[in-house]
Image (cartoon, rainbow, N blue to C red; front, side):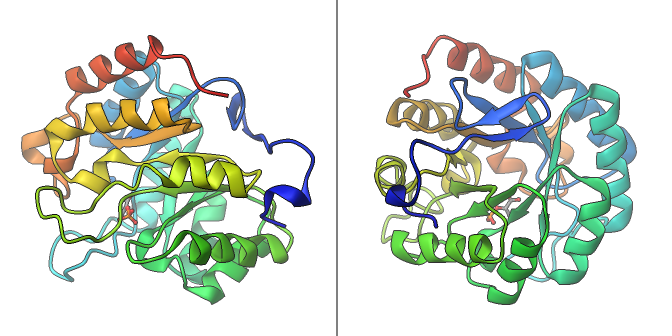
Length: 263
Ligand code: PEP
């Protein structure tokens, strides 16, 4: 179901006015985590003002360590939903198990399966039975073949609205937290009809590399990018170092507008 040969042409996934896999680049942005009503609304306004297309915000944060902020849970989903409605942008959030999927279905337009859950097969099946677009992040130790199979799990249950997201893989390199596998973009494009986006925040985890990596992703043919943007970087409860501030995000959007999407 996932492979290119199973379909004529490429899949376009529509969410409101946004098209993943269409002729225009999709920019998803917002904070790593929803921290308060005010924070997510300020972020949402900044995303819309700069020309972003989708608002992101985590309510359940399965961090590598159990001790940092783990999200506001359902309260966070409510704030995200409210902010999305005010700025009239679709919203995406991560789900970490069947229970959180149940909550997310009430509040968001797109669900995200994070790198740490790419092979959580019961979650993949549950998302497959839901009628909602899903961003499937690549596990940081997963091969492209394993990733394609994870998408197959979702599609086999009847949900064909899968968007791949390359977010960096583990490697011997330590200058960045993960190594952005830019090859994944053309490889997925040649193996699958589904759209692929790139997350340059989670891959590098370094603020100053986000813009160049985002541009590299677009040049390689990505259908979109997902970046973390926090209205007050210095106060971020999670992932401040891998987020852009408002002016950097505006700068990124301006630079991306100058690059034509590869189709
Ligand atoms: C995220 O996007 O908030 C996130 C945790 O990403 P990843 O699963 O790629 O680490």
